[in-house]
Image 1 (cartoon, rainbow, N blue to C red):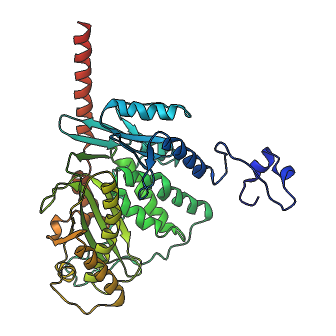
Image 2 (image 1 turned 120 degrees about the vertical axis):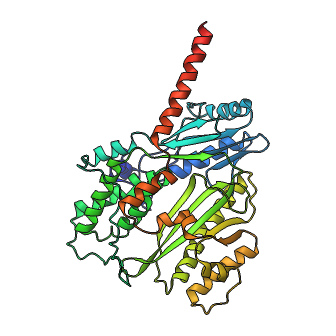
Image 3 (image 1 turned 45 degrees about the vertical axis):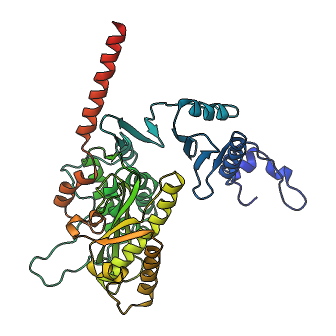
Amino acid sequence: MSDIPEEIILEYKLRDKVSKEGSIYIMAIRGMYGLPQSGLLANELLEKRLNKNGYYQSKYIPGLWKHEWRPIQFTLVVDDFGVKYVGEEHAQHLKKALEKDYTVTTEWDGRRYIGITLDWDYKRRRVHLSMPGYVSKALKQFQHEQPKSKQDAPYPSARIIYGAKKQYATEKSKAPLLNAKEKKFIQKVCGKKFLFLGRAVDSTLLCPISAIASQSSKPTKDTMAQTMQLLDYLASQEDAVITYNASEMILAAHSDASYLSEPEARSRAGGHFFLSTNAEIPPNNGAVLNIAHIIKHVMSSATEAELGALYIMAREAVYIRIILEEMGHKQPPTPLQTDNSMADGVVNGKIQPKRTKAMDMRFHWLRDRECQEQFRIYWRPGKLNYADYWTKHHPAKHHKNIRNEFLTPMIMLEMLRQEQAGKVRMSAAAAAA
């Protein structure tokens, strides 16, 4: 009974039902609070019931479901279904199959999914994703007040010494450690609460959350100051909106790295993944994934850091390619852009370097995947590499200038909503006439 919470043991008087061997035999027919296996049991039961109606879960992508012959797919996150179908009768078939055993509510306009609001602009063939009120509610939960002055930088940037031949990374903090309560506060801020927001719509949060989370096991007073700056940034900015334009659903990615930019001689890798067209240079779109990752090992050169970043991005891209293929979107070799000509030369066989063992593994892995035609790695200048934003801590001015490249101003979403509300009023007036 060691894995059963005490309140469950008392409520169901489980100690009175213990066998001579010290075991309890139960049959779970519904989800039981506190039972670790309840999610798995519920999923297996749902799968068994839907299988009878011709629906099956992908063997490669958990949570992605299809039908044996109907043109319908859906993703399932906890109890939220996001359904894609051609012909309403197929969606009705799924609804009736679920209603045999579950209470079902529907939103046919597809306006909400897993806490994200979707504003569909069919005229311009795009969709806007946002989470209105999420930040204000979270700040209220953390009892964080509005800052006196607007904060445009989510994290302190490294001080640039102009004219110096060498620039130094920020040293590891020597400030006093935080107590248990303060440590838990930082972990809450950088855990589920704002990491989900960063993954879903506001990718500008990923780099600061990554940096703060790397200190969360032994946070100091400096870590708390960084966390408070992040909260000030969230309180100062309007709700984030990310926009996706209709595309050919071809995956493309940008990769970049900053060498020795983190404490303890660590380097940082950044990635920007988006869906675009099958072009030589794919046009940018809203990010389906951004990565801000501190490379665990110490890199011996900028080229090794760039190769490490390419390896991290390519490894992520492999799974996204599988997802897209399972959804029916065939993928050509994924274009993967780098701004380091040496790394490009190494991967594409233009240069034969003397490599370390760690560099050797990444080098051969990337070459093998390119030979399998999974990737097409190419070079373009750094100013055209969107992944650069997630490789370092920029000053406030840069954040302010670059924000609109990745996020849509709220005014554009408000204008769309007003336009759509006007059309609804006109339709209602015409129907009444």
